[in-house]
Image (cartoon, rainbow, N blue to C red; front, side, top):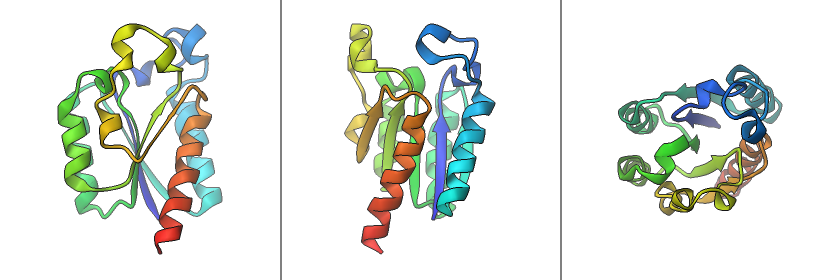
Length: 147
């Protein structure tokens, strides 16, 4: 299986960005943790992080041509604003899990809107970095049942 992990705006600032919400671990720590989990699961994983909406849309589109089996995405603030990212996920029809490190449903009112949720097969929020491994486990199980 081949998965793409996409992280959006400001996730490159993990470790320094609001550590009371996101913790002190860095983006590199996140990538290392996911990579180790993927290796244990026998999953090939690649990563994209960008603060630019179009880069995220392009990565989702490219995932179709790269024959990616599943996408794990934390769009950051684009969760609440980007119809383009939602449309890209719908267009490629690749099972996608929305992940958030924090409990977005318990935060500011504007964070209650998630466009990506309308295209995702599952949402995992509030489990810190572990949400990414939970998403991977879910996709492995879901896709294994379809095989």
